[in-house]
Image 1 (cartoon, rainbow, N blue to C red):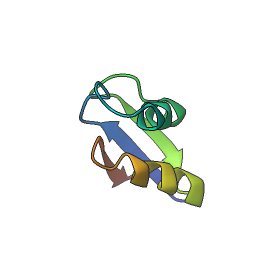
Image 2: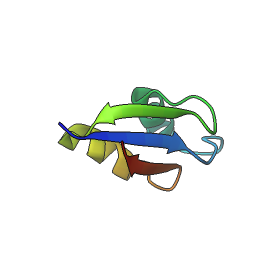
Image 3: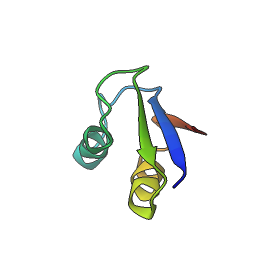
Image 4: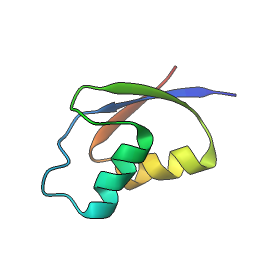
Length: 59
């Protein structure tokens, strides 16, 4: 299965609670932190919810 790297590039301050929870569910806590996930539909949906706060690349 394909892997995807997700990096938080913007802060979650002054963001709605659901976006903060989505970042936390992805495993992101700080700006600059990078996590690696499988490229599943659920993960891609979470990334789409916070696409303005993160950057992605294929691993």
